Picture (cartoon, helix red, strand yellow):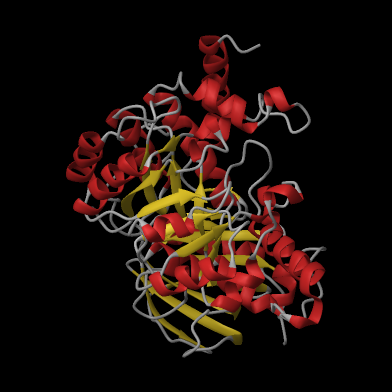
Length: 474
């Protein structure tokens, strides 16, 4: 596959010209302190190695992607588009943005407190103790910090797993953070940390948020994240009875909202099936302890599974192993997620590498896993999981332009041979040059175009310091 020399100066000039054109965004930044989101406009990404993730279109060793008003117009070896801004992408891989299907964004600023080598300051004790003291402003600042890191790592869609919604105002703050950073995503509205397990979640507040936020311009959707059902293995995360689950899940379904739930402890799948709770609107998280019978139930019911390999790979063998091979063999929908970034960094390339290494370690050549399949899991399969594959997940004309450009001329990537292999084996977030969500260039040349980097960090630091003080956490 032939790669031409990358012209960085041309990319900067073209991207700057693009950002300055077009109409002002309908929803400007509210609290970020940054510039308004860039206009969508019209541009052509030229000369890239294109990985479309669309089997009907295929890939291109060298090609162009034409974008207008946030939509992909065409993908071809050479596109004529008079008047469109040109982005020189020679020496880059052009591909769909990563789609994260499970991320506790509200915990993002707790890095100064969480410790991996001290059980008393581990993720669960810290988030449970400090989570009870969150104000809506804390929620906004934490989510914005997480999304900023997500953008820098190539995420254009994020499933915000918000299991600390202390009031509708907190949900509103998290949605504003998502809107203000320009990402596509779903807010999974959950019960607050420390909420009584014998009481349903705030279904009235959930309905209020739906009325006020949905529908919007299609960038944001809504769902719920359920507490564990019939599982007492993690008292810090909430464990509800079947009766309460029927109220929570029934309330969500009455509003037409999808449901997601952790399965970190003993597998609840047979219990959920026998209780008639499973369906295609359910996503489970952390596939560690399923049985062959349960995997067939998941396939039959259309349930999807999100795996968070960076965190899951740190768990002991006693709590299970990532069952990617078993799920794929059974035909269960699988996607990739970060989980949280209070104990490690956001890196989808690392997630793919971990999954590949684990698959090789467990199965060798008996169940081969290709690099292309892994990239598909991080992009298109995430869109399938979240029910938005008609809008994003592949570089398909008519879909929205959620695109990243990855430099292949960096020292850790060059010389390029097979692009999928390069992404899974060598790539790092620092290789990502341009991030486009819904046709807006949100990062270029490794810098934000709208977010104020310094302010995002400063306000996140202020938030965690205030939380520690309110919680009396030294």
